[in-house]
Image (tube, rainbow, N blue to C red):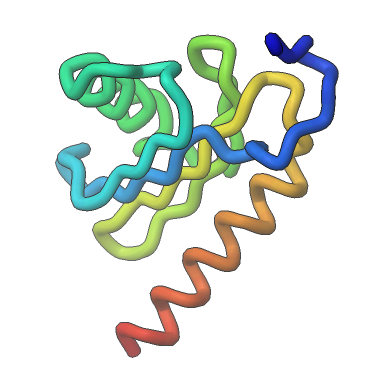
Length: 106
């Protein structure tokens, strides 16, 4: 059964990505087939890094996706959702991930 874009889904997060300060992948987990191949994933990761690593904002729209992000020293944390996704929900996921890793690595 194909879902329409407005139909509610538990799959609000399409990907979680952590990049280093050169834009190289440290961790990436994709939860759907938006970028099925490793090559497409790497290209997408370079695109979001290039668009976000020099800005102070916390949200971007890229390739029809909503990207919320946060940086800490030399790491960049990204949570990706669809364009109609609630930014506050994505930010809550990002903050939970960020705070959990900060606690663990303290």
